[in-house]
Amino acid sequence: MNSAFTALPVRDLARTGALPTARPLSQIGSEDSAVHLLTDFAEQKLSVLNSDMSVSEARLWMKLADTSFKVVENQAGDCLGILAIEDVNGEKPMSVANRQGGALKDLRVRDIMRPVSDLPAIHYRDLRAATVGDLVSTFREVHEEYLLVLDDDRHQPSRSYLRGLVCARELLQRLDLAIDLEHRATKFYEIVHVVNGGF
Image 1 (cartoon, rainbow, N blue to C red):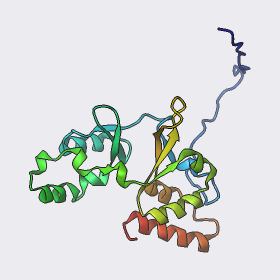
Image 2: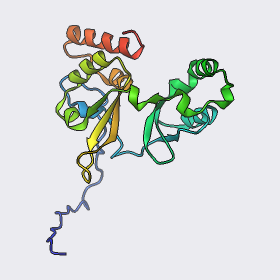
Image 3: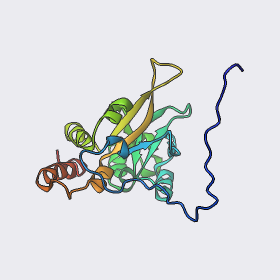
């Protein structure tokens, strides 16, 4: 190997009694970077369900999960869609079973998931350049609870992969209303409207 590598400078913390741990921003404002709201699959373990799994089994896994959604994959590991906790706990399974004329126990995750083809997607580079306010405008425009975030494959530049996603509910929970209340309150109301399905 011809490359010359350099060791990073190492600090001696022997005299340090305690070191604060970085915590994610719990409150954000409209001018903050939109990337704070990304659930980045490059940084955290991807929570996945198989598309052939029964809905009852998926419900159990969703109850044990520490996230409100799971990515749905096929046997080949391709992302087919997103399954949210409300998809398994709400009326959707019964409605789909009735529409298909089948039994609830026969439903599979693929039957009730939100297919990738139905979800809006943005590019990671655009998210990095955006503010939280830009995300609010995007959610208002697309009227969906989730935005898929795509990134370019370094090994195959012509291909994209699912880097992560942004959830409107998290934006709603973390949006800081203390600054510029009158202007922000309108945006806040609009996000609530989008999240609750009132377009």
